[in-house]
Image 1 (tube, rainbow, N blue to C red):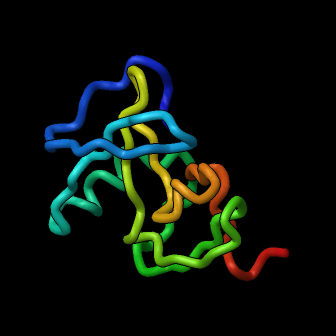
Image 2: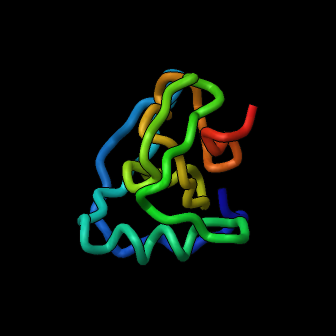
Length: 99
């Protein structure tokens, strides 16, 4: 996730419900996903979009390129493709080789 006061991304949004609360989900074109990921990913090193991660909350695996971005209050949030299932944000993505 990013800090409070993030600027809105230049993409349209659609409603998304997380734990019964409506937030906005950005509709990011495939050709812009790498740029958005680089801008929002908070850790070093930056992984490849083709790497797989496990969402700790849902227990499901995904390729990083399947990420989603939500707008919650004044924040842009980098989340897993299974966000509705358990609320897995970027801090909950674990590499597959870790226990």
